[in-house]
Amino acid sequence: MDKESDIFYEEYAIESSTDTVSKPPKKKEEEKQQNQTVSGQIDYDKSKPHRVTIKAREIKQ
Amino acid sequence: MKVKIRKPSARISQGDIYRDVEFVEYVVEKKGIIEVSKIIFPFVIVLTQDCDLEQDYKIRYPKTPPQTKDKLILSVLVAPIYNVEHVYSGEHLDQLGMNMRLIPRKHTEGNFLVDNKLPRYHYLDFPSGLQIAPSVIDFKHYFSVNVNYLKRKNSDFVCQVSPLFREDISQRFASYLARIGLPEIEKKSTS
Image (cartoon, rainbow over all chains, first blue to last red; front, side, top):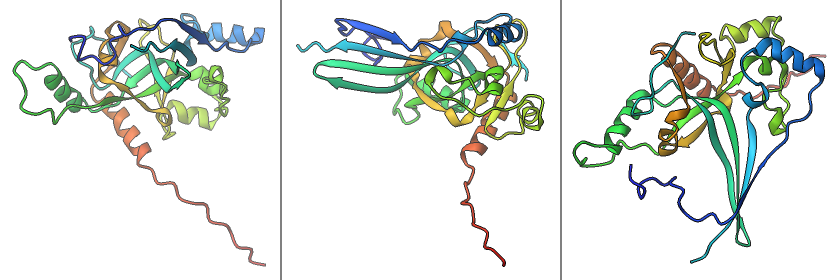
């Protein structure tokens, strides 16, 4: 796939950007234990959808 | 639910499961600052028909130049996969500020969820080799992703649901999407 045909090719200028991940609310201890028992292999918090906001300054040419 | 595991292939297939797929909520520009809000879904499954994906791939990466691009698709339809334990407790979208209703696991509705008798959901149980907890697809939360974007996520390919089982998922999704919501009719008092 060449760069020009891929509209998601991200070489365009992002002068500065900040990623903000919404923080999940703190869990009760008993809920954590229950999750660990059920999961065993994966981190539950990472297995939930979360929102990310990116801010970037536009560069005018 | 049996899940067939394969190496990432050249093209996207129906029933493919990918991790960390982004859904762009909005893009706005204010005084030269561009703001992009997106939701990262830990797992999604591809719902687009496999024949459409195959035709798209042949046109997108042709051996000989195609006469037309009639069969090119603009996006791939996917649906998120949530950990079933989170769905039981209604917490699967709590990091998005959304509290969902409870589905008690030991009651009738919880059994219906696992038996795929709730039209909105499709239960998946993965082999122990895959590090995915038992999960459910939520057909109501379907969305589309760019073809090239998903193609570039080969490293995030998890597995592919076997044929027939994936067709079962798509058929249930189509049925859910085509449902007819009838209005509630007020009962007239007979007194």
